[in-house]
Each structure stands twice: as structure tokens, then as C-alpha cells.
Length: 203
Image (cartoon, rainbow, N blue to C red; front, side, top):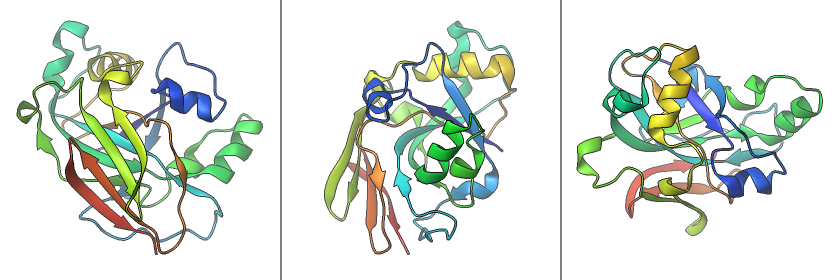
């Protein structure tokens, strides 16, 4: 499986990082070694001094798809969860200044927290889901999937023009505003429609 992530999909987040509003989805990838599941601890890497949390709704691809049409895109994912796209902001900032790729800042080991996944049918409307992240008991991010620039179906259509989607692939669909740093000793907890989806302790 592969992890495909979407940057700048919430306007307020793009603005808070002084990024331009994209005309098309901004896509990057994480390897399967980035996955951190089962509420395991995140160990602060020695190569960065500024790791940030970014909470995101994650969708799971359920069948192979290439050049998927908008009409059928909804049939290509079957479950949703919540995750964190951990980002080495110091490395990312340096690489952006030099027009270099983001991989070292985004694709490092255990940079993709993932919750258990919930069947799509259990949600009344996947385009109107509230989600949030708390740090040490205080809410730091709030989002709603209705606020994205590119909804789930549109992301599947766009990505599948370039990359074949396969069963089990995960798409991290973007983060709302409120991203910020973590420190050793912090506890993160993610919520989807008021249900706790994961906890992650920073070690």
C-alpha cells in the first residue's frame, strides 16, 4: 500500500503558512514505513527541532482505479479514519526556500499516525464531518470536511490521472488551520464526530 497526502486543501491552513491557494490539489507521498498505528508513541526524531502536528481525515481505497471519473469516484473508497501528518517544519521551510522536494520533512518514519478505520456507510454525509485534535487536553485544531477545496471524490479523480490507486492505499485529505509544534511529553488525541479515534504520546 501507499500513502498519498494532500497539502493546502483547507484555505485557512494555506493562509496561516503564507502559502498560495492552489488551483489543483497539492500531492505528496509517504512510504508505508511512515505509518504509526495502534496508538503507539511517537519518538521525536533527532534530525528536527520543530515537528508539527497536522490532523487529517483519511480515506481508504477499496479497488484499483486509473483515470477514475467523477461519476464513479465515490465507489473507490470504503472507509474513513483520522490521522496525523507529522511534519518537520524546519526542514520543510528550508526545502521550500530552495525549491526542493518535501520528502525529508514529510515522509520520515512514523510520520503518519492512523486510527482504526470506520466503514463509510456508518456516516450520514462524508462531506460534512467534524473532526478535531487536542494537545494535552486542549483543542488545537477544528475542521469540517465540507470546508475543503477538493472533496474526496475530486481527489480520487485528480490523483488517479497520474497514479494508479490500489486497494488498501490511504489518502490523507488535508489539514485545517491550527497546526503547531509538539514537544516531548505532549499527548495528542484525535476526534471524529466527537468519537475519540486515537491517542499519541510524544516521547
